[in-house]
Amino acid sequence: MDLGIAGRRAIVCASSKGLGRGCAEALAREGVDVVINGRNEAEVMATAKHIRENSRVTVTPVVADVSTEKGREALLKACPEPDILINNAGGPPPNDFRSLDEQQWLQGLVPNLVAPIMLIKATVDGMASRRFGRIVNITSRSVKTPLYHLPLSNAARAGLTGMVAGLARQVAKDNVIINNLLPGPFATERQMGPMKNRAQQAGMAVDDYVRQQTDLVPVKRFGTAEEFGNTCAYLCSMHASFIVGQNILMDGGGFASTI
Ligand SMILES: NC(=O)c1ccc[n+]([C@@H]2O[C@H](COP(=O)([O-])OP(=O)(O)OC[C@H]3O[C@@H](n4cnc5c(N)ncnc54)[C@H](OP(=O)(O)O)[C@@H]3O)[C@@H](O)[C@H]2O)c1
Image (cartoon, rainbow, N blue to C red; front, top):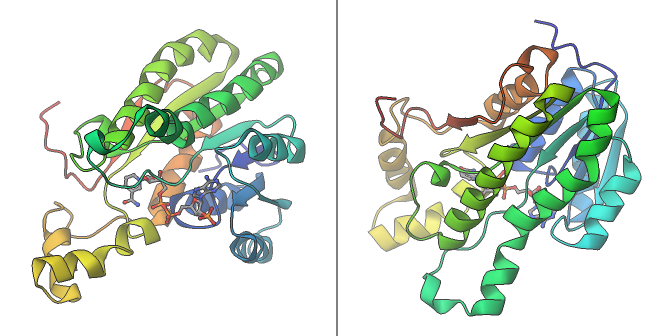
């Protein structure tokens, strides 16, 4: 299927690794020029090189923290009029909500709530005036089902989801299509990194622990960044113009609901 987005320009936040990278690679395969991003310079440059070598698009690396105003300015300077915006940032650390004071709560909501809203604010009207825009927010399955150890994530993702629910319906008439993609367990660094510790805590060998975790997923494995990226690219395609303000859960069937 031709997604009809070759020649478009995308800002893909937090894309040197993991799910963001999967999105950047999928968009590049479709002929979209991509701005890729992360805070670690060596990793951003290595990913940019890899995407360049495997596509024919322009790849612009931006080493920046998307949760800062300066970082977002750098992304917008690299691509002042994006057709596509993929909002993403690292997820918050696990904690008990009681352990965070007011300032920590306010700061903790920035990467996954304030930063995407600021980037949407900076780009959505331009998209509307050009009568094409696609925004995909990478959120989390925690929008559907709370993850008890991640109160900051539960709060930030739900906040962004609520904000976007209204906006998506206001800008759809201008062919600006906003949706959220909700990852369940994907085999990225964020998911796999803590496995060793968790296995130790459970008194299990790492392989056995991973098998126990994948067994909880109906498809019996974790998702891949490539699968995630391909779905994201579809949501950015010309064919997705009637999918508005949806929360698309990719979790291998883990969240069991009839509807
Ligand atoms: N993987 C899962 O199973 C899963 C499930 C539910 C939700 N999620 C959410 O999906 C998002 C992506 O997760 P992932 O698994 O792809 O994580 P990951 O493998 O750790 O990759 C995160 C990427 O984001 C970059 N990044 C993080 N914070 C950034 C910031 N402030 N500014 C710019 N770049 C930043 C990282 O590079 P640098 O560190 O160099 O900046 C890296 O490229 C996270 O919010 C996560 O909570 C993931």
